[in-house]
Image (cartoon, rainbow, N blue to C red):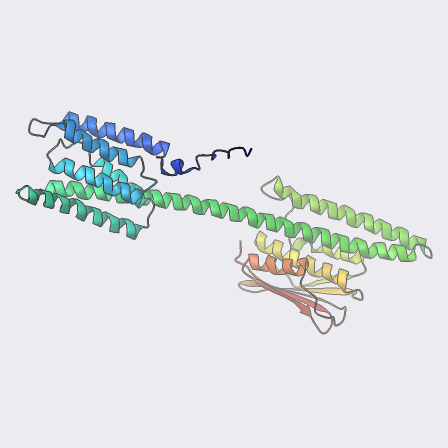
Length: 380
């Protein structure tokens, strides 16, 4: 025998779709009681008796508000259908028009300003028109009391204004949340690029020296020992830099922000692989984001030289600072090479520059591989 299906969870059934929201039901009760009590307090002998007709209209309008989130426009029409007859039948004034203001607020909180104003104008026209029709059928003069019209305008305007402000606050909060999420995602990508740069740069140097050590281990053991010492130093430097990078996850600022002042470290590690690095020109004082991006681009270019240009013995880094931008050019002497397929390293070069609004390129040149980048100085 097949067991019966499980009942819908979390109020997802058809009844939940049409049932009022608990907060709206509570609001409807509060508004209804407030309108009834207020009308009773301001009632005068000239007013029509509140009970039972006026009270029934107040209860009907307040009950409709319980579904204001489910069907805002329909609820607004229902509240007007209850409030307008309440006033033209001469029941006590009181705060009964508050129900229309709440309905208008709900609609305006979900629509743009132009549409909210449009709905408000339609509401005002319908309200005044209904009163004139009711007065004509009763053989009375249409209500032209200035204070009465002003009160209708105020009721509609308050609903439009407060609802529009609520919608603006909601949109601002959503934008702030999206921006916070975007910043987190950008930081995650930045850390991923940084870890990739550190690991790939150091492992490339270690792999080169390990290969040298294996090659000369039998014939020249002294050189093999020297290669192991260099591997030890490169590993220690890589671990220190990796700890510095990962410290961003625990602290707001890294204890040692990467910058062009650390190019001597890049040159020292590249020297372990037999590649000399010469820096020409000066970048001067740079904003931390620009300084860090320039350092990472140079480091990635030198790493690619050590890893791919086996015959390269020298890398020249040219720094040229202009009025608005910093130009970088990194060239090795590894000789003409075939085009390199894009990988994480080359993508990282482009991302470092693009993050600041700059640009970069990497392509074979006549003497070796050429990496160029332009970074705006105003970044950051």
